[in-house]
Structure formats: structure tokens, C-alpha cells
Length: 481
Image (cartoon, rainbow, N blue to C red; front, side, top):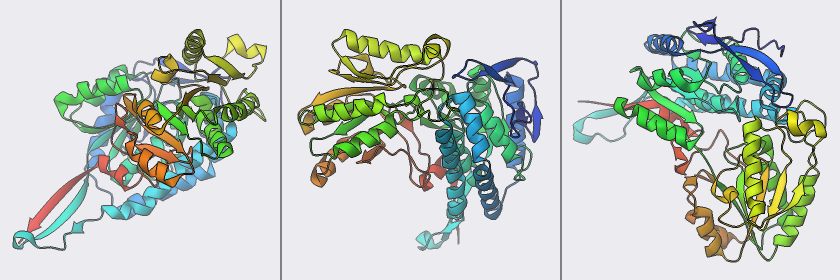
């Protein structure tokens, strides 16, 4: 079992108290690198979730000043930074990503609390300078209500930080539901939240499969906002389930990111950026490149450089020195990546990089060799479906119009990347791409200071920036003579 000073309890947290499931049911947390059980956590359901929502609703009636919220956010940022090493170790054990990468996730999480501590003043009442209808007018920013924050396993700490920081800045009370695959990062964060002096009920944690927990969050009248990061099918189900209750949703859903490299690009930079973008988290990120479009004039050079870099990756247990890519989250994820590779090769693609795995990794854990394919065409599964794994399929293109059309030929619109040294070309291409985040000569993903979110079937709502507050506030306008 994983021992940690941040995991003195592995229970849920409701109304200021750690608690087991009412049914006493439990489930294991598995280390994907070893297949070992590292913790046992409760399987909560309808009764615990209802209790959590009721506790949040009760606490919502006790408003916190902007200064108090600022203090909470700042303290939590400092605590995450102070405990980044231990938080990273927990993330690595339950997710698998290399330790340095996991510690970087802790830094990223802290940045959201630090950012909102610095901008929460924007929620002060705003008097209008004009006097329409001979009245003075003041706009107030009220908390939207109890909010449900549902997070995925690929960034088990950072995804909650994005949501909870904005919700706390808005003075909302939260019910948090993490992925059943990676609940320990959230338990560890709540052990820090417990130290900052929040009133009981301000933040609540329920653990277990979605099922009954989701039902309560969708149906309970006190829950006014659901912020969810996950798959598009689940997002669509949340829309249907909450429609009768007119709840507000903030959804970050699936992606199918194009990574476009024009013939005039700095090839070495493009390869560097693709490596950090594509193979972070073993390719299990919503914003990582899923389709690599390279102009024919440079494709041979680009592919050769990329293959060399991929073959040099060290795959293994994220806690081991020198490891640069860990496992996938489970065997089901491995099977999906393998299916995409097999489909592409059966349709004429060829592998030009395929790192060797130790024999012990092949059948006993969740590893898959980072792979680069050439000869990929539009009908292949890896082009039309988000792989969510360490596969980089290279697709050749001739013209600007051709690649813009190909890049947009997806129902998703979360992230895209464009590499060119021609500023005029960038100015033409980027506005044509239907993606909420477009990296220009960079593979960088979101930051706390800027709004991030999707278009089309990648969802709606924004996280980060001042816009990230909007999902958690109601504006109330008060005129007076």
C-alpha cells in the first residue's frame, strides 16, 4: 500500500469530516506500472452525495468576503508548492507518469490558485459610469450556487485545480467527484484544503463510480453548475440528464488535435514541440497532437528526426530514474492504441519508430511502445478517432487549403498547432481553424492566465483567465433612483 503523510485517510470528505461509504463498500486503486493495489477507497453513492450537496447548500448561505477568498486561494497555492514532491509521488503511483512530470503537474495546479488569488478583486461590485433612466446602476457578481466538479484521471490534480480555484474565487460551495482510477491525488489535495480553514461544507469529496453520484448531481435542485472534463458521449449524457433541471454546464470534452507543419517551418523546433506535446502523460492528454500533418517538401527530414527522438524515449515505471514515458492508465487503453496501429498498418501505413519494451512490460502491465507511422491516410481510425496514447501518425499534405480542410474535418475543436515562419500564412490559417486553442510555433497547452476550452463537440465553457470565473457566477444588476 502507498504510504504518504498526505494520505492519512483514504476516505471521502463531507461537511468537514472524513468518512467511509455508508455501505462499507470499497474499491482498489491500481498502479498501472506494476498492477499492484496501492490503496483501498470507499465506493460512495446516492446517500453520501446527497449529504455532500446538502452540506454545501447550507454553507452557501454564509458568504465569504473577497479578502477571505483571496487568503484561502493563496494559502492553498503555497501548500501545493510546499508539498509538490509528495503530490508528484502520489500522482506517479496512481497515474504512471514520470515523477518530474507529475511534480510539474503540482506546479501547474498551484498556478491556478495563485492566479485567482490575484484576480478575485474583479468580482467586486461594479457601478456603471452612466445613469440610464436617471438611475445609478450596480452590477454584482454572486456565486452561482452549489457546483459539482467532475474530473478525469489524466491530470488528477490539475483538472480539479482549474475548476475548484475558480469556484472558490466565486464563493461557490463544491462537491468534487474524481475519477475512480485516480482518487488519491484528490484525497491528498483535500488533506491540504483541510488546513486552510474553509468552513465545513465549503468543499466536499465523494469517491466511487459515476452511477449514483452522477444521478444525484444531475437531479438535486441545489446543484446549479456541473463542470465536467471527460468524453463527448458522457458530456452529451449530462446535457440530456440535466435538461429537465435547467442546470448550467461547463464541458471540456474530446479532442482530435491537428499538428500542422508547413514547409517553411523550423523543423527542429517543430519536432521538439511535438515530442513534449505528444508524449507527455504517454499521449493521454486532451490537447496532445492526434494528427501530424507535414508538408511534403520536408516530410522525410521531419519523419527521420522525429523517429530518432521517439526511439530514444525511455519507457518504464515513472518512479525509476531516467524514465521519460510511463504506462497507459490500463490495459483497455493499451488495446485501443494497438487497434489504431494495427488498423493503420493493415491499410498501408508503416512504422518508422517503435521503442522496444522490456519483456516484463509486454503482458503484465499497461505499457505501449511510443510509435510513429508514415503513409497515414484520412480513412484510418487514428485520424478519425482520438487515440489517447503514444502514437504519432504522419499525414503528408501539399497545399495550405488542403491541410486547413483536413484539420477541420472532425467534430472536435479543442486544440490545434501551426508551425510556419511565414507570419502572413499564420494570419490566414489560424482564423480558419475551428479550435479553441491554437498554438503558433509552439506545442504549449493551457495556462492559468488565459481562457481554455473547446468548440463544436469538444464542449463549451472556459477554464483559466477571467473567463474561467464566468461559469461559477451569476450577475445581478441593481438600479436605484
